[in-house]
Amino acid sequence: MALIQFIVLKRKGKWTVKSTDQERSFSSQLEAMHAAIHLANECGKNGKPSTVLLQAAKNQFETIWRYGASPFPPGKSDLPPLSEAS
Image (cartoon, rainbow, N blue to C red; front, side):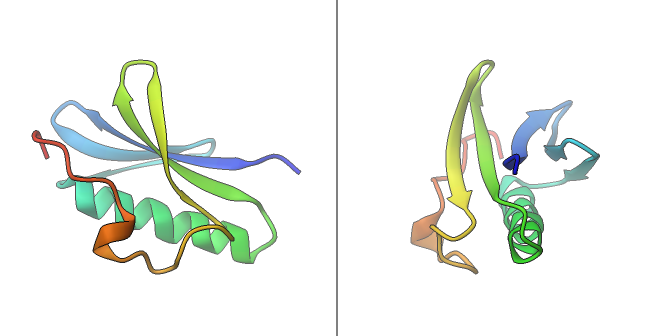
């Protein structure tokens, strides 16, 4: 079964959560990360392996959450520091 990825990235001044079939915008990085983790957790509960990636640079992504390997809901210390531009 394919891994479903939820990517958190900054686009046109807003934080966006993007996956294969959807894209949603948020006003803050924290909101976007929490939404992506919630979506990934729902996919995982439905039997679809999922992960959340944070775009650190144009072609650099950091895994910030994985279904079955990361706590849900995540605590503050479980998430990466917020970017300066959030």
